Image (tube, rainbow, N blue to C red; front, side, top):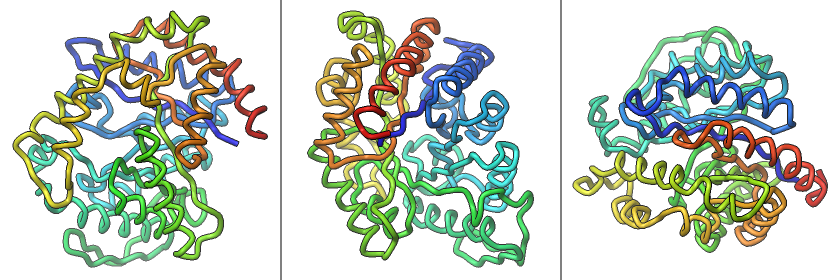
Length: 355
């Protein structure tokens, strides 16, 4: 069975769409997704730019989403421990887990935009070590009372983080990874889920295989959990689905490249190949995204077929997270797309995957 949820990723700022309007649209979709049986809602942490900047604290958004839903899992996709003290982050996680009656899941990411590191005054070459240390400290605080920590970047005496999380020993953890086999393997070793973005299936299949191999070799039961994000648009006809979101998707892709533009003059051993990867991504547009499977566009039935084809070719995943809200697309069209997939796509997917 493949579970399907919604992934919110803002690509707007105060000049293009007021924050009040953006969040009203998203929370309206939260209510709709809950009614239609979607699995989760998820959002990112980014700063200072149209690409993601309306979401500096995903836990704050998820606390609001908890009040507009009853069954949805609430997933950070992802928080950035590099920029947050673990004592603060653990307390916020516990708070949202209790507010939501135990529906929170926590994805962690390393961050990847040089302008964010620069503005926070954090050395991009410390990315991986800060990330590993931050997760370890947060995990200890959530799982144990009187948790002490001594690290390179953070140290604290015995501390009981409050509120205590409702889920025991803590909410499920995820690690966000894009193209680094090391990141996929590390998620498997730690026994966390891995969340990623749809790439060419040939590349994705090897990364997922590395994750599941590391998971099994570490002695964890089962094969782990893989979540893949897809840009998605559903319509009554294929022609409409391939035309209506075109400009909005291209706007989103352009916002990513603009936010990451200073990789052109940046190198880091913690991010091997990133300038080249982002240069290649700069060549992507709506049509190429449809072709490589990262954009699912069509009738609900066609989107299900495309998703299942990707599932088979990449080696399988447990959760699809649909990026369906593009900030420059008519909110009525976004709502209709989410509604179509919820009423026709999700039941068909469940029937075809034994759900």
